[in-house]
Structure formats: C-alpha cells, structure tokens
Length: 266
Image 1 (cartoon, rainbow, N blue to C red):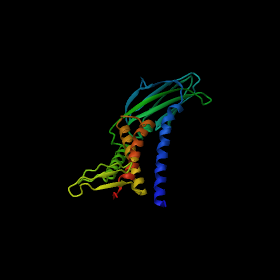
Image 2: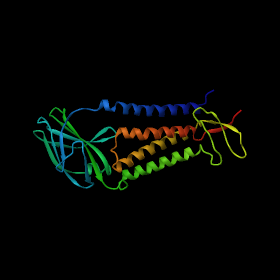
Image 3: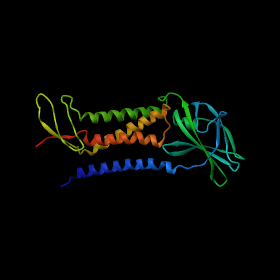
C-alpha cells in the first residue's frame, strides 16, 4: 500500500516539475508576445541611445531627448525586469518631441550594473506610435549595493547547500559507480567489502527535497543578480530561465537521490 509519505513526495516532485515546465513554456513564447513598433529616436547627454549601451555614474544627472511621430503627446519610460516592464518615469511633449533633465535615482535604487530601458511614445488615445530600447550601465562596485550583497549571499548559500547534499552521494573511503536513475546494482571497491553489491534507492524526505530545490533556486537567482550587478547582463527572462531552471532541477534530483538509502542486494 502506498504510504502518505510516498504520495506527498510524488506530489512535490510533480509540482516542482510542472512549475519548471511552465517557466520554460513562458520562455519559449515570450518572443511571440513581444510587441513590434516603429523606432523612436532617443539621445542621452547628446549621444544616441537607440539600441546602445550608455555608461553613467550612479548619481549622475542626465539630459534626455526623444524624437517621435508628430502625433505623440506622451512618453513613458520603463525598466525591463525578467520580461516585465516597470514604469519609472514619463514625459509630456508637443509635436512628437520630448526632453528633460533627470537623475538616476529611479534606476540606481535597484543597484548598479546593467539595466534595460524601454521608451514608448503614445498618441492622445494611448496607442504606442514608436518605441526604443537602451541599455544603461551604472558604474560602481557590484557588492556596494543591497541587491549585489543579497545576490552574492543567495548564490553562496544555495551552492553551499547543494554541495552539502550532493556530498552525501560520495563515500570518501571507497569508489562508487552509482546509477541513481535506474537504481541499478553497483559494486563497492574496498579492502574489507570487495564484491559487496548494494542498491541505491531514492530518498522519500519531503523536507530534504524541498530544501534542496529551494537551494538550487537560490543559487541560480543569486548568480543572476551577481551577473546583473557586475554589468555582464541585464535581468532578462531568458537568462533567468537559463540559470534558475538547471540549478532548480539539480536541487530537485539532489534532494531525491542525494541521501539515498543503501540496501544490500539480495
């Protein structure tokens, strides 16, 4: 008879896998959902910022100018965050021209590193007439902000927890040939137990599996935050999935098989 513990374990595994598959599906369809629009002309501090990377100091003021179709009466500025667009500023204008002087406080509050901005110019009906994208690199130490410190801490804790879980599959005093997926019989080579055959069985610890999966998510998320704060990549949905999904799957499998029960083969 199937135990409650086994049912809970299977349910947890199915839930985690369904969540990961859902995120992968979102990653696959995100290009289809992207909106296409005519390109606006954007300049920051008199330099073109259309599909370009602009470097600025954390507390530096900036002068922005946007040239859009004449019917444009409003311009919204968004910061892209894992596929979502967060509105951080707006400008009103006339004749399709918008300009103003701003500080980086709305962006630098998220830390330093690389950010992606989107400029949308709208007509009086709220329809987007043109759009432009700018990568903004805010100079500074990746570990000089709360986001950078939190990302590095999450990555360290996650990787440490995963390493501890995976370590339980290795016996320092012997060599193991382990097939955890099929549960195949394996041989332990040692002076005292040469020829002894064991079977590695999956663990049914719900707490262990959940903790290990969370550790994988922390490791992937922390790595993502560290890369962004180091100005190596903006926080895109694609990169998030490429980092978080593999670490989460590793954590799930490590939790299930990491502390496998050893039972002598019959």
